[in-house]
Length: 270
Image (cartoon, rainbow, N blue to C red; front, side, top):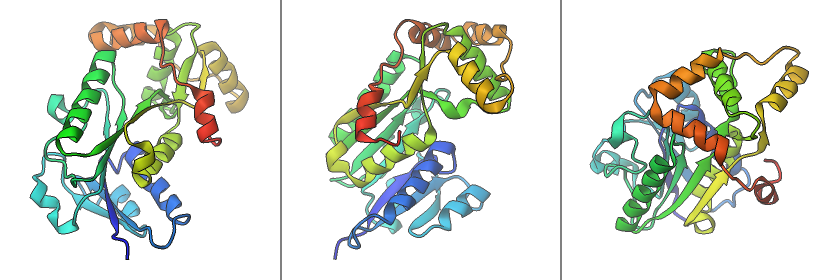
């Protein structure tokens, strides 16, 4: 009988982590009966509404802790076969922003999937090199998901208005975007099929359009104008956070460069 594989999902109560868990649950129905897995959702509060909802699914458990816990803290769950770790701009300092801290459990033959967001090419490069080095030390394989802009940032709050203001600053150049649902698909498949995704760095985007076109689509779909902060808000962010200013410049001049059509051949539902 095949051993149950165990996946450690960090940030499980957030948008990305939670979507990964839900995608894994959806994939379970299509797996052969001898392929079983357990998703261990790492969270600071196992009694939160989101943690309880995730743990209500078959084969999903919420475990208390953070990325600084010693390896022994995870021993009772058995060997960890794969880790899903995401980095975000503004993580809690250099150590926690690392994709695979030394306290993250890993089996000798395990794999690690990194969902990567970074403000600059340099910080992205550093995060990827750190992951590769740690995986080499542990004899693990790695998969990197390089994310374009988040469609899900367009929310009816200040975050959404700020995102729209930043988008407008990019000008006429199209911005590539990806949804959390599509990130979750590739993240779940990379965990379930590590051999096929080992050593791959995959750019993820499902659409691209400039701000003017995005406004038209939004107006036609929603019936009102896209909420947007004043332009000076984006300028202030670029001034106060030099890395963000560099990111704006990079998006205007280069962009993410994701092969969207190639991805759609691999995943038509993108």
